[in-house]
Amino acid sequence: MTVTELLDRAHALGSDPRNTNYAGGNASAKGSAVDPVTGEPVELMWVKGSGGDLGTLTEAGLAVLRLDRLRALVNVYPGVEREDEMVAAFDYCLHGRGGAAPSIDTAMHGLLEAPHVDHLHPDSGIAIATAADGPALTERIFGDRVVWVPWRRPGFQLGLDIAAVREANPQAIGCILGGHGITAWGSTSAECQANSLEIIRTAERYIAAHGRPDPFGAPLYGEISDVERHERAAALLPVVRGLCSTDARQVGHYTDSPEVLDFLARAEHPRLAALGTSCPDHFLRTKVAPLVVDLPPDAPLEDVIARLRELHAQYRADYTAYYERHAVPGSPAMRGADP
Image (tube, rainbow, N blue to C red; front, side, top):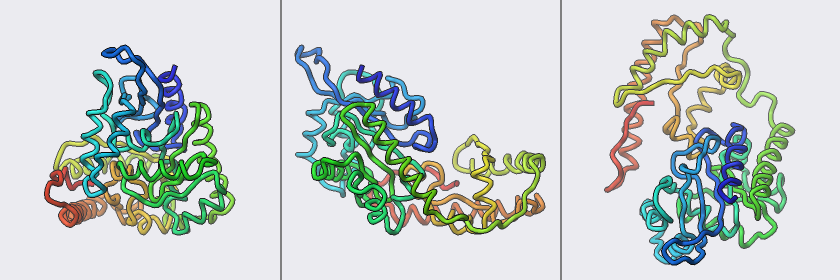
């Protein structure tokens, strides 16, 4: 029943992009099972594994860990300078064979004293989490039901931070993670899901009521017809794919949803895109920041292709320099410099 409820909750939350991005966030449930070695009950946690998607999660995509061993890692945690070592340590907490690899967020779920936990990246929650006045906004919007947690790199220490917030604020249903997203909890799966949705929808309503009419600026470009847009995309995407396959062959995905087109038609989109990601998960899609073609939608195709080649070369140089600035001895090799 525990696993079934967890999967149902994951599907309900993950199927709506307002709640979290594709393959982003995770959900967990704690319960007990019989240890086949001792015949004694053992406390376990089922949590979405690394790389899975909540909306399509299956039991095979869950990592199953022993809570006693996971929580015992507190005694050997070496500190934030060696966070990466803790992900490998989760393998020694696994129960049984098979299942998914534990993700970096495993500690967030296991150290929290709550039977059910959701960690999500909703746009509305991220808007609060990345605001300059995020702590004050959190209190204004949610009162004491949701608590602000300052930015912390995802990992074991963030799990300790959230566990401490939960213990110090028994009335709270969740927290806003600065620069990151939200975490909610509950005594039942249904309560946890309801608490997650309360945070998300409350933030949405506040933004709708208090946000500026044109947050992305005034219209910058005129519209082009659907037919012309699709023809230009068909001509440009093979070039884009070729450039982005410099280091490894890639498959592209074309999106012209109303939200995307509205953003790209606005005057502020070059500045806002250059600011970079607003959530750690976005790095998986855009690296530090996306490549933006700074030409109008009706520019001659040969001009767009020439500019694409210039911007791609600059992007690779900038990303390589970024990697070299931040790499330390033992860092993984750069996986690629393409957008």
